[in-house]
Image (cartoon, rainbow, N blue to C red; front, side):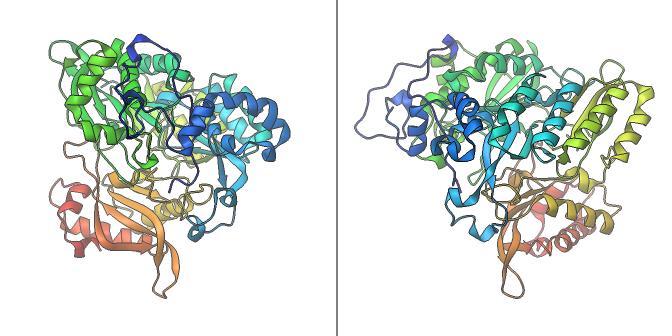
Length: 577
């Protein structure tokens, strides 16, 4: 499904910090192997690698500002359009009116519109009121009001014209926001606990490490040419609130019996069409060492990562081939030049929800208030209204979550009721139903060139139907809706995962529908991907009926305290159909 190539950069990264220095090249063998630089294989083995060697993706900004924004869409070099512009958060969006049956057969230039999706990078999910207001204003002025909160704590605009990109950057950067490396073969946004430094139950605050990684490494040519994208998670929350198991690297808050609070190091997670859970390296990392360890792992990926085939270029494949012991040894010997400290893994989280929705105490006597839009769909006007509400109630800070939710931070107790009333009046629920709280959706066919089916409208309709049909259902439940097999909405890890595809309806017609994944879970001792029942597919029109039937059976058959995911694993295929 990788229709549009992702750009790339110099053959030899520039010299950087000693912690990530390139190891001496291995003796070159006669075959080209997997294109690993550390094995002496520097000749690009595909068009994407050649594109990156020809010019670093970071360099395209100058051309956007001086050439493309003045000459318009048709002045853009194709290698920049479908490649390097991603390094600055820009993808062409899907041309309107192209149905899902043509997604896989049209050429990129036939699928794409002359407008862009622009991704605003929000590391750790942390926002100030002026930043949220600037996002809302940019949405209204330049993106037809679009503004979706993603499951990686970013905000995405659509309908962006290349002529307006410099003005958007100016507005965002004036308040400290950026789109640098929001996409592309580089380190993407660093996700973090939205309540870092505030939660009453926090093990350790990882905010400094997130800021330091950004200061040292984001936008640095030393790390801007990776084999594929690189995803990072850092959280000291005992709720395990950053889906650490499916990131390329994750630092998970733990308490070492001798050294105190720090982080457990995980590597090699990722989803898409070949999902793998991350693995522990068994190493405890103090806060001060997190940026160096991060750079070491990224250095391994840059130097040893597979560059021959795009579908094997993620870090998870290298980790699977090497195993955690070898990976840790190379990290220590070649990149850190020292041993890591052995340490414990994270404890089982006590909470069933990890999205921070609701009213919760902070460690300073104030409160944070989390609320749920439907499937992350917002707009510029609404974001400005939320910014106004936060400011009116004494809060200067907000946060996004990996569940497409938002929080207002630092609220005094006497302001809670008024803030909650204001949010609810905007249909931003602080006490949402299970279905609104637990349903997330990717961009879908509305804008995405890879999608086959609609997701956002389908998700909102499903929420409304389930709220009407099952008003008393209050068990924690995740329903993740994806428009294609690439799993941006984490379908394999949901209680109910819906993978978009064309299916045959009762009249023999090809219509939008979903393949079903059931019983996925993260953050528990038995984290696992959902099971697929052979032939279990539903049309989009049948989806509310199917989910209602499934949940009714779960309620009738569940054992005491049994989560849906546990039931789905043991249930018969007949019960799940």
